[in-house]
Amino acid sequence: MNFLWYIIIGIVSGFVAGKLMRGGGFGVIVNLIVGIIGGVLGGWLFGLLGITAVGIIGNLITSVVGAIFLLWIVGLLSRAVTR
Image (tube, one colour):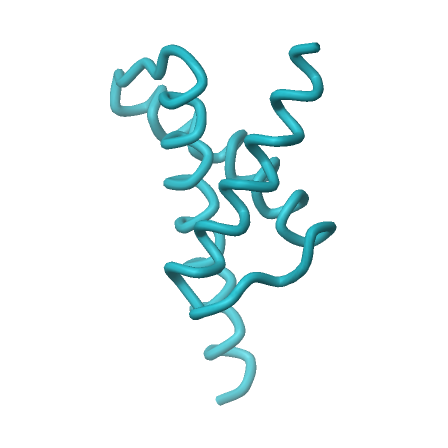
């Protein structure tokens, strides 16, 4: 059952990050991938800062922050490549 929650949190966080950063989502599969990578990245970033997320809401916030950071990095890299 936990695996299902991780997938749902990944989809939701990828969707929210896509809306916040680019004005639209990328589709369910890409949102899932961005959310999962964002969850790992957010957990790592929060760990560096000494912040612990508890519960579904905490995991969702961690994943959204990580996904936003991931999309920001991708945006920086894509601008650097196009110049």
